[in-house]
Length: 78
Image (cartoon, rainbow, N blue to C red; front, side, top):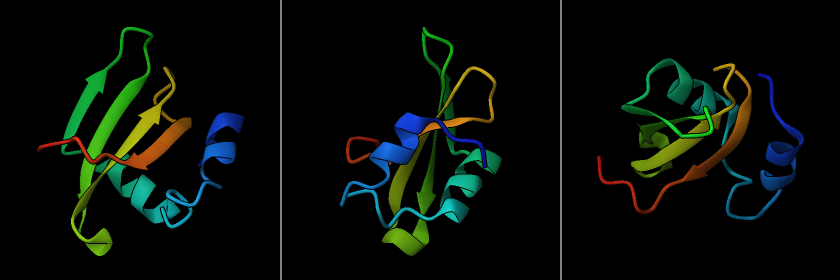
């Protein structure tokens, strides 16, 4: 999995330390919703049952494969 330095820094935060790479891969492979931002980055969401049914948001760079951010999105209402 390709990642940015920003992602590597942010994933060390306590609220993100439990996010598994497999969950990120799952969101990328089977997103529930996808949205392109004005800067070209791609937002994807999927429900992660193993995480209590929470929705994980993954943000990719414009190339569609480099992970820039990943977090459980409390405001997402799929």
